[in-house]
Image 1: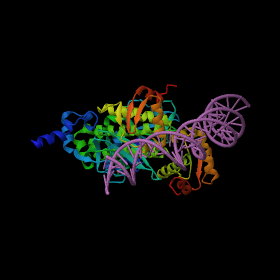
Image 2 (image 1 turned 135 degrees about the vertical axis):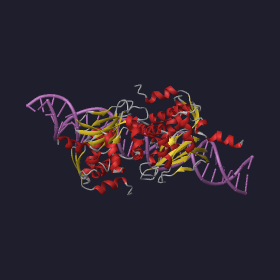
Image 3 (image 1 turned 30 degrees about the horizontal axis):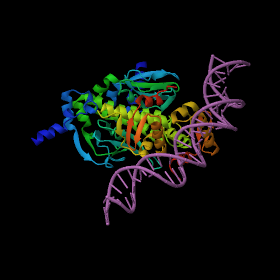
Length: 238
Length: 238
DNA sequence: CGTATTATTGACTCCATTCAAAGATAGTGG
DNA sequence: CCACTATCTTTGAATGGAGTCAATAATACG
């Protein structure tokens, strides 16, 4: 009985992330084949590492619940946050090139995740060819995302914050969370480290948005009052 | 006779880029299998497109000779140059996610390239499993590269130029070109569009490096006089 | 030779950073 | 429960680096 419940909890077939995570393009049969290979990992706490920059690449990771940050350090040692990760997102593709992870993944709150072992990638893809393309799509998505961030790196602080907030809202919505009020699991410093800004600038911009009536801010809790207004900031309405 | 010469010219087995391009990790037999699928493409001229942002994804492209730029436009229509491409580099991985290219590839001079058709990716990987991992490595390389650019996006104009020049020098060396004197196939505007700077700032920084005796500049022709000095600019020697 | 493109240089401006201080919140132990 | 501390956040003032505007110079090209 308890085994039945456990089986129910851990399989990809019954995961509520099937439309976002790796199973998204697959048939039921294919998801079953995938599910056998995927290893579930229990909860880790805030600040704990999923993997570290420089670790040997041994798996692709899917965030199951909670959130994490993808962190890399520049030559001066400052931390740059490459991405904030929400449930259903796959990470670790950057590790294939040098057989070691190019960035660290750190939990931002209590977080669980699943692992697709590296040594089974080939055999799994032989068995389930669709996974090959699906994996590539996720890898491609990572490239697209990073490229878009790069393109946004030269816009103003105001635009950066607006893009970040609306983007987060969209991603939360996609996952069934509230998209207009949420806690940002990042400090001002971390938000700055993600957007290429200082913590003071982040603070000032959030205040400005609040004064404009676009959002309400209470520390990490954000309420979006005018989503379109935020979008207008960067979608060239000049 | 002429057919023999042609066969010699076009196969992956005899390409001088075998240590950089897709064949880099493969056995001779595997390279032969790869070579059958790869389509060679003749010369295109400066300014011509290899593919356009929005085009349906139909192949992975390998630059064979010449150079190209990977370009995306932001919301205001400014062009951001995601990367400068040299022989042996693979592009197009960003197209898998949405089944259409997320950026445009444009020749910077007379350029030739090879195509790995999208519809044959699966079958090729079934036949030659090593290619699966090799393709992923190239995709991973693209992620690493873009992430590193993102990390560098918040450093100073001086550091950006130094990183760009030394990086280009390293890549040219790897390909057997002269690494201390070369023509940059970009205008000041394009260099700025790649580094997140204005053309004026690029011009001023190159002048500054010249005044410091690090390089000699004559329009697009650059001579590096003190490579280590350039590296010291960004490798925290303070 | 004339035109278009590309590059240089200078002066001024502005946005984000830096420096500095104070305020708010969460967590800990007595 | 309160005091104490560490961490996080807000706010102000001053600075500086890169952008903008503008004019000129050099080069390429038809």
